[in-house]
Amino acid sequence: MPPRSPGLPPATTDPSTLVITSTPEAIKAARDFARGWFDAKGYTNGVREIALLVVTELVTNAYKHGSAPGEAISVHLYPSKAGPVTEVRDGSDAEPHVKPLTPDSFSGRGLAIVSELTAAWGFCHLASGGKAVFAVLNETPK
Image 1: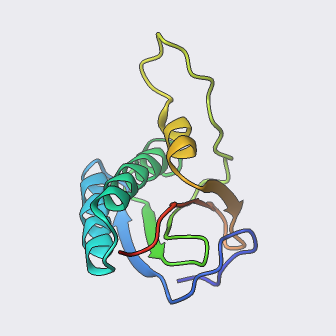
Image 2: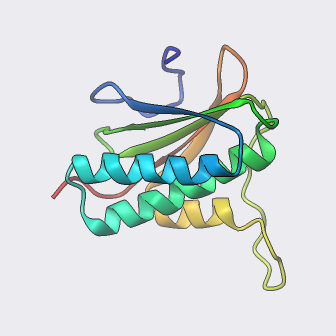
């Protein structure tokens, strides 16, 4: 994994990492990876389910907006003092933003959902190019 970038929550241990290819199947692979990690670390079912939703949203955004077909997307999961962190890296420098919620929109709610369900979320540009988008969840292991 590339060095930690300023602006990312400090990890208390080395992250667990999954590198996937930008395809629709990558979203399920990332979700399965996160499920296994949160189960192995002993987080509650509630935290795990929120984490799965967050990972799904962040990887979907990386797939749709942050990478070309076949490019690498990486998922990093790690504990921090603030709570468990989900981090997704892609090759795009485009900054993510929360779109205004409207009752008639068909899409564009992902980051608004992430914002509501997590303690914090954000992003940083990587020295190697691209960006990391992260979310800090609210709970600790049971």
